[in-house]
Amino acid sequence: MPLYPSGSYLVWVLLLTVVLGEACSSQSRAQPKVSSHPVDQELQLAKTKSLYVVIDTKKNIVFLKARGIPLRTFPLTKAEWIGDPLAHSTALHLHTKDPSVSPLPISPPSESPTESPEENPLTPLTVNDMPNRYELTFQEHLTILVQPPHLPSFWANMGHQIAGLGRRIAARIATWGDSHQYLVLSLDPAEAQALYWAAIPPMTCLVIPENPSSK
Amino acid sequence: MTSYPYRLPRVIFLLSLLVVLTTTLGASPTVTPKRTAPLKLVTTPKIQGEEIPFYPSSPRLLAAAPKGLYLVVDTAQNRVSLRKGNRILYSAVASTGSGARLQDPRNPANGWVFDTPRGVFTISSKIKNPAWNKPDWAFIEEGQPIPTKPKDRIETGVLGDYALGFGNGYFIHGTLYTRMLGTNVTHGCIRLGDEPLKYVFNHVPLGTTLIIF
Image (cartoon, rainbow over all chains, first blue to last red):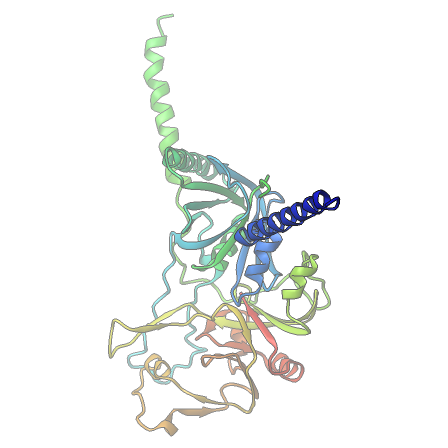
């Protein structure tokens, strides 16, 4: 009899421990830990056999990578969001490039069997044929506007600035009441051409905003 | 005082002229490919022994990187480099895909685009004195009839002394047209000069990772 009350407490404590422990473990099973840390996200991309792009607006740099290795870097002059920036680093899938560059057609020789390929070289598409001002549209409602920061000629630069302003205004209007987001990247013209060359749909692109919110 | 109403139209006219001139002179993007680009050897800032900048410092990302030697092909600059970790051990000029399109005269809806594939591959075969089993497009491009007998497709001596296969009929091989090295002129394969090809063949084992970008 004297032991009954304390024994009762002991049973209740054990019961509560089991119930609470089970509740905590079921909670942890129901909510797997999802990380939005850029390294975690990049690790997923690095495990694939595909090239991918990392746009780091915090460090103002774009990387072309594979297996975690930087293959080429594209320093940004400026990265600017139109509307609200992404809340956290996000992996996006490239859908289209605008304008597109069509492959050049080959015309088979009609009556010149003696002509060797060296005498009649193929005129290829090179990186210099790529545009330096273009749009990369992603499946997840993001468009990246790539443009050179300035052009050498005064008048060309003036036109470029006006055209850029027009595109920003159009993008700003497009984002009103819409979830579509725009990111403007200013790159040196040669770097912009190289980025166009490197970006092939459906390439994955990891965008790291300047101030990612912790998740 | 009285000149203000007369100046206003002139100012408006001049401003309109400025806007029209600036938009027409500067707003056209460089889209149209130029067909008359001169052939030139492209140099690269990456040289032998140079360290690759921004190599991943995170141990977790390093775990995803290739172990040991790996080959990297830059299709924009037409360079092949042999790397280990964050160092470039060897670099050579190459030729990669032209990006050109050949229409199939038998079915105009079909054709071939001569791009070098991009991504991560593995060296899956190594061949000495390779012979070329010419596909249909090679005969169509030359304006010749497609042979019916398989033996008529075999051509020797055009791929150099060595070939390293990386799948789907794509190879790293030699070339007779060394003057074209450094340019995008191939049908998708990667061409090297004789010496670099020998070096790569002798140093790269089967299973080596090949990254093409």
